[in-house]
Length: 482
Ligand code: F0G
Image (tube, rainbow, N blue to C red; front, side):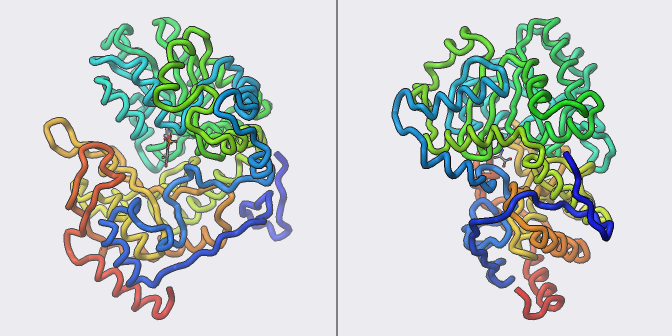
């Protein structure tokens, strides 16, 4: 990829696209933000989109689509069975992953449901570099257990390790020995490891994991939801990928796996999902669950329009200019915050910029959900919706005690091609203000706590009147500004 240099020498990410459709934004005054937050039980999922200025909750299903994606949607072939659009999607997957068999599903967790139902038995253990919330929930609900095998250093937020998503190979070997291969239905590799800050895994590490799995006859499975970011980092950071095209890297990655599944809300820049399988036996053994839970085999719960957009989106994933936009904006945000001494996950990953809440507000204990508290504070400070990735995103232990997360992160996701650099600068500005006023931020406690995936619909309240104090300080510092 050629770089465009500025005469001034300044280094900022430069968009290689232009914006042709826009959506108006509103920023409610700070007092209204506090009111909306409390009406939503301090759970940013429960806010109304109209009350949000910058929605940095997720990059899932909210990336800007290209002109070619939109055009393809109009030309989609609508049929319950046998749609041409489905076969075009299947052909694109066969081309870019060289996996012959495909099962469509309505999104990533639907794939996880089908996979866990098919392969996970009570007592089984699924090793992975790191868990994802919905993945773990599906494994646990089927009687299994998850073990996480990234190296201990990967959980240190401030690091220079370019591949924090890598497996610790000794941990993998030892766990297989301890658990016994017969209790391991598959090893799951997550590209762009979500919960530790969108951190990549290297091709070399994937190949080493594959060799260990082959030795023990264990199946290899890839969660490719964040593969596009991971490919970008492989190309940039891994010597053996430097001279390969994105397509060549993708094929090399894919060649290691028996099953690859993805959320097309991320991989493919539209909305949907699917499971790619290497053999007809695997496909045969799962196809009936698709018709039972998702839909007929040629749509699996997706609209044909979305399937058409995914097909084009997957093709665009091969374009370095397309897949670099997210990571470059994220790197800009991470560097600007880091320069100001604000604790962020480093090196910059994909997916979003992650604030380290344990360091940001060390006076809030893990039991008072520091990452969730910082998310609430950021919404008050700027109408910015981020996502808690810490203790609140964990379920309680079976004995009811809190499962304290190893990292307390606030994820400011960067939906691709959605925000301008001045909007990112606004987010940096409001986070900087919060950092200066961090001693005002307090904790949260549950008022309604669901048993599983509690972060989605649980309700909380502040443990003191810290939010009123924060609003008052905002007014003093910003006067009549929104
Ligand atoms: N796997 C990974 C790595 C994910 O990041 C996600 C979703 C899923 C599976 C589930 O896919 O949402 O289509 O059902 N991540 C979203 C996020 C929700 O905000 O990070 P899904």
